[in-house]
Image (tube, rainbow, N blue to C red; front, side, top):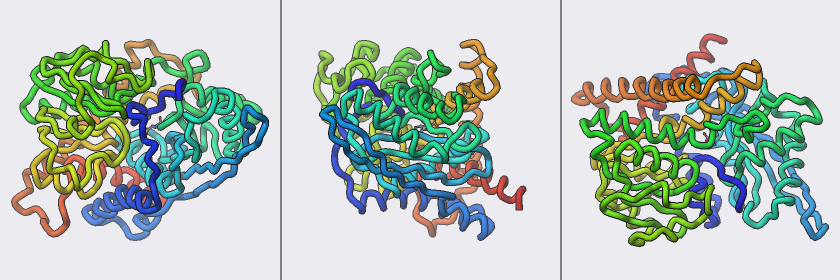
Length: 443
Ligand code: GLU
């Protein structure tokens, strides 16, 4: 794959490992389990709880496309629309050989919570094509994307469901998607994450990494540390990891290790993160940088103030959670921590700030792109930066207030349910209450 630089995990792109049904079930269970736990804690109305436990709709489509040699292949695609009470479904499209209905369902629910957490007028959706984009030529990717857009055409739209980039997709796929959709309606707001020439925001690509850095900075402060004195390790060097690492570096942090799927580089004095090639500059080239080699396993076990897993899901597991030696984990990728690892890190007193808060900058930027598509308004770079940052930072404050309340109430805490990250619990509490509140208002 050379042209895409999808969100939330493009960095360590070697996610070629095949996932099986058990993995998919685990992925679904992670979001679902967190939802169930939150519903218990909030004492959610049973009817609303039941409704939110299942996606509104799951579309499965067969997408035929022509290979360069003239043969025709058919790829399976999905679009899951989880909950639309707060607005149009919103969330990415991923191209990956292991994409499944369960994975999309889990990630669609996660998008419902993420959009609610940052208070965007959206529900959650997620889709994907079961294909390895690295095995496709540019022309094949274009034909496939256009046919996928045709297959999903009747289910999406600026007021219905608005896809965006995700693993294995980027601005170019969004441009093809919007162009194909234009046969039905010329509304650009059908997708976000488009190239700037066709309505995209220059800020969109860096936004998830920017929010990771902002959230890390605020959380370090909350724990009495400062970004200037922090040592940082980042796994995944794509649009999330590289942008977060570079911003933290610019703010004075010492980024001692970064990696992609081939491994990483380490410098105890701090790397020049701008000199290390990101996936969107030279894919898979992190280890070409002249510094000491570290494996991904070593990076995850480093003694640093801040660890940012920004590659793919499920990298912090029961097997390696005890090896984590960071003081704080901020999730850049979607779902990098398994529930077992989450519980273990909580027991060990290592705070984990969840994906739905940390990488929410992507969907916040998407919102402003969509808003400018549907209202034809534009903002200056300064206004946009201010709006993007303040959405994320206000959500951080809300979550922090919940965490602080819970910590105060700790002496009476209910220890019957296995504890996970306080920050995750708090983020889910804010998000689920907001979505449940919308259902209540309509019932
Ligand atoms: N892949 C992004 C995410 O996981 C997409 C969000 C969007 O912009 O719709 O947050």
